[in-house]
Image 1 (tube, rainbow, N blue to C red):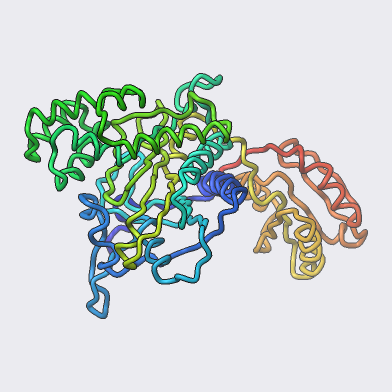
Image 2: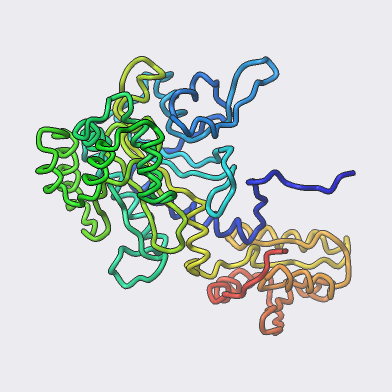
Length: 447
């Protein structure tokens, strides 16, 4: 038999890792729900004709195969295209439709730090409105999530990777810059895809790739000079007569952001932001940290034409995704996780079959009062059961042997201090409620 192994770019998550993931997910969901978003899920597999032609160069990363019925299908690449399919199939949905979706996606990418082949995304979208106010709200939600997770805006008593910044741009502005530079309309998406690689290949690399794509040198020089402009007002003067709609939308976006009380230093305008996927049509945004250099932690934008490509009717929409894996990687490197209590909080030991009824009655009482309780499954020496509790990081162990059963009591052992106390069964719930809030003992969660 061959040695067991896992596919490259895939991972197993053990209890300690799952606690951190569940912690982050719970806070993200809290923010999503506080803004009125409702959850949906979609299948892992979609028909190929739904997925194809939506992602540009990224389409090569989709896991494509034939199912048993010889149908062309693919694994879910993101949630935006499946959402467009859902909206197209269900015209009865009340608009605007606000949904969140948290599930795994798959990409046949080269695994590296912060980039896996199977990973979780946390998406929100507002479908059915072209109002730029919706774009501003998506940015506000993103800001609120990172703040809740313990990140801070640059300049607000934070350091290193704890500082985050939301970068914004508009695809209509990039299209206008291409027109201003003399780029043919059919080349605009290619230019955007290349500009989007600036963090990976640098500005010189962008220039070289544009040349390889057949863009004339004078056009490239025009594009690169305009992309250095970091002010909407200066841009408006430079490309006067081009990009009026995109510039208007960008001004409107920043005017709305002040109503959400987002600090000015938290959101910045950059023409270098392009977002590589083809379906973006207006506002685009990404969230980044200075350290570690891991790429964007969140990103999205407006996709007003995508739904029409699937259902033959354009419906405006805007949204973003939080990359769970990258967020957790940064939080781990920056020691941002709180001390997460081990689960369960109580282990009840076993003596023999004659004590089973008493033991499980105690377990039921504790669980009904919100105290996570595990019952040891074997009749073995107490010393072995205590060792198990220590390795798991379980803070309290209950001993209920013949002597305790006779007196309707239990012995509770504090595994940190090694102190033991005989407690009346009727008063056990109150005893735990008085003592559990002080528990901060760590553990390796069984690893």
